[in-house]
Length: 265
Length: 298
View 1 (cartoon, rainbow over the protein chains, first blue to last red):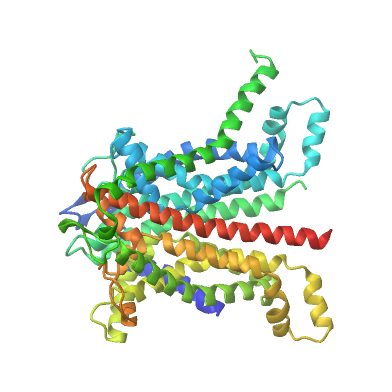
View 2: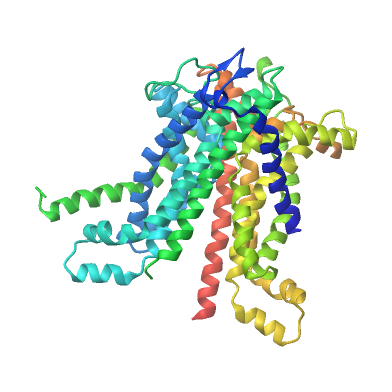
């Protein structure tokens, strides 16, 4: 039964690679779409996804790691922390399209950011928060208590202990979690549907208030709403998105592996 | 350092404390927003219209029952597929596979988990649905069945990782005791390990269900998007529309403040509440399991 689960993964990835490679060329990766999207390259989508991922990181990482530090270093298990954990579980369980709805209502309309990278990043950041908090907290908790005790006995304050001792030790685990969270954010379509994604923009975004194309949204549109779209380009776009996402996965796995080997406890 | 360490400590502490509370803040603000934008729908459209069986917003029909039934059909189908494969794979990884194979298989499940839903939806349109149409002689390949297959594939990694953790957590003594009493490997798994991991496995299944209900893009691309209320079993092979796809498809076209806009938020509230219930139940099961094992060990 496991083979039936695992083999399709090979088939899926292999098929996309096989069908998509013919479309990949330097022009494809660095050019702009032309001929009503049916020809040309997908550079704006690649850049857009890139910007969105970075934007999500800017908002989600400080907030998420901060929350993880709070949960792991500053509190005991009490009813307040249980409330926070329930909140995190709920955030994790909210469907991605409801995030899109929320982001649209709050950031695009109410706060008047418009369809922008800012709105999209904020929405994706809140969505990524649970993953980052959970993995970062786990990483922080796995640092043995002995490290903290020694630091305090040498005269360090709580924050000094965290900043100079605990955090560096937990860093590989935190980074792995962050990358996996951002990988999810990069591949998501529903939250960006109405908060940032535009179908055809002849120029690259120049400010956080611009809308932008994005790879997942682009794939969605060209495969469902453009008649006569060459199938080669569809597969090519899928391949680029897949490579983007899987390489993040690979980096995270490598970091995790090397950290486990180099760990000092 | 210009400030003394102690006052700097205070500022840092405040920042960290507020990050900690931020999760609660965000859930609250999302909930508040959904309610504030969704409740006006109840004022604009009376309840009988909302529970009618026609969803045709252009003509003013806002019956959400077809949408709920669409979500349920696809989720049930996905669960029927994902649970056997998911639990089977988890069993294999946790109990049967040799150590070296585990390190090999787990990353693969993680890769499957990382596949963006659009990519699977895309493959569904391009590969799966023509295949099913030809194989089963259907009028269209875009149906609840196709959606269930893909959704099952998406839910499998969730089920596998949580179930595998649960099976792994069963103490070795249980298995050793069973084997010592003469049970075969399979008997041990079926009568001892699996029941011991029961709550974890149930949690895994519920999280898989929650994932299926909330999935948007894949269903939007392959389920055909026809909001029709189910009246017999053949509906499984015809197009349906889920709540998630409805929101995604129609939100871009509504006028701010119109009845349609508010009803979409209402559908969002329904989705939010359903996921809330499933997720809280799942985590409550985990909590009780911990409590039970604490009692056993003390």
